Length: 108
Image 1 (cartoon, rainbow, N blue to C red):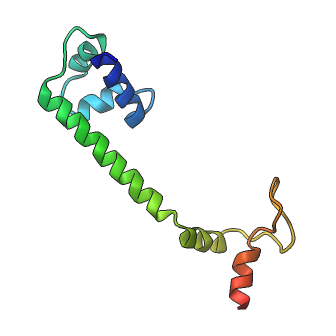
Image 2 (cartoon, rainbow, N blue to C red):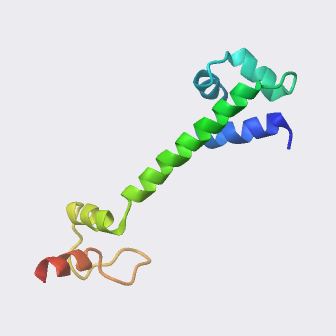
């Protein structure tokens, strides 16, 4: 994989399809410099590559925090405060009543 392919892959993963300007801003380089790197006419400096790695690590860490926030207990609490579905009614493609487990826990 070429450096420009790697840059494109990381940019799209971090920022989506319109990634070049956002990544350029976060790396403190101009859009023009980013375009040259993507075109392969220039290579990013080593310090910029390290900064790119740091951005990926920060995003990975943040996504890990988000994943942790979605624990089973928090999902139950979230579901318990959401709109109630009458006991016995089922969601499409689901074989058990929605919120029944939360209501049953309250009865215990």
